[in-house]
Amino acid sequence: QSVLTQPPSVSGALGQRVTISCTGSRSNIGAGFDVHWHQQLPGTAPKLLIYGNSNRPSGVPERFSGSKSGTSASLAITGLQADDEADYYCQSYDSSLSGYVFGGGTKLTVL
Amino acid sequence: EVQLVESGGGLVQPGGSLKLSCAASGFTFSGSALHWVRQASGKGLEWVGHIRNKANNYATAYAASVKGRFTISRDDSKNTAYLQMNSLKTEDTAVYYCIRQEYDGSFFDPWGQGTLVTVSS
Image (cartoon, rainbow over all chains, first blue to last red):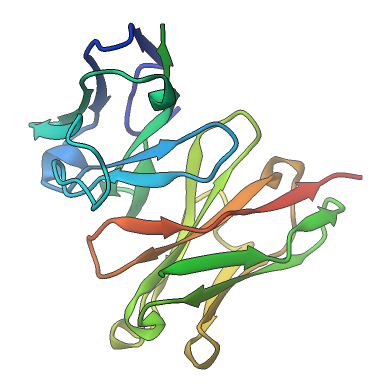
């Protein structure tokens, strides 16, 4: 069981908007540690998608956005495209574990 | 281009050992921390451990699942990090990725392409 909780799957139609939640606790997200999001396309290595809760690396479309509040964070994807189908992972640091933690991952299906 | 390339994966018997390498290029390797993350087939990402830079005394930290069996080291003169895995178990079977962390508390980027470790008799 992952320290950060994500829904196993989400789906949305082409062009629609979806959100993926990431729920933590007072020892990780709630302690103020940044949340980062990674995208893993089928058969490839993960890639940084959002860093520092809400920042996009160069080359990541504005359709992807992140937010954080309290002990949770969210990733929003607007204008869904077929090639957004991937697994998405949130990641942070946990002070109780003295280590880095990932969510269990969310599989996005574009209908 | 910032790049990390893992190597050294393969098939090993339970109880055996294996050493993975992570060769870096395109950035100031000596100033960065290096992390290892693994992914079993069809499963999620699991942080394995990391090694900090010289300024932080090359401090290491490990996940509970590998502590005492795995050791991370680095050779800044070769821009390479290593993951020594001992007393391997079948549940250690996974793709192992190395990732750069530019400074404490910052994000992981980029990821290497990964190397597959299979622990089986």
